[in-house]
Length: 199
Image (cartoon, rainbow, N blue to C red):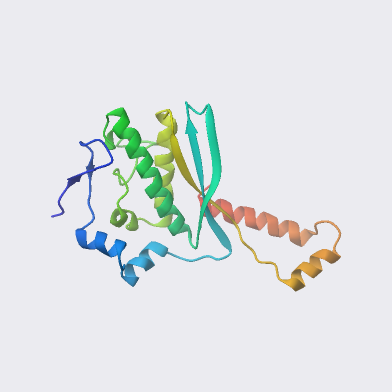
């Protein structure tokens, strides 16, 4: 069976499922095309799959927000967010002297599945929606435990529709927003709400 290691970033009691050494070498050097496909997921060039970074200190007395990175797919962005927030929560667990697993209940609203720090192969077993739920649960932990300082990463998609010259010319001839343009705006808002997992 898989050897269970102790997480180097979390409290020493927190168990983490390790990747195999061959997998780690592959990620560092030349990952297999099949693995990249799993990581990439479905590419959607109509949406800018952006992430944001919110950094705070002194119990939110000071903070900064910035646009972080843009990815080709929702899955890429979510994997990045999951990795970064896992690192941040591991740092908090270590400073608080607690286990990662102890931060999440075994049932109820704040349950986390899988309840472990980020592991690439474990995350790749999840669909995009489940990965979004994992990311949201980890983000919520920072608020539940009133973490004094840290950085929080979020997935924030936005429309990325390229306007060609002919379309722009038609827009320039119109005065005000017509019904078609308003309907397009509503459709984009619904699309982003669905992608981000909002109700």
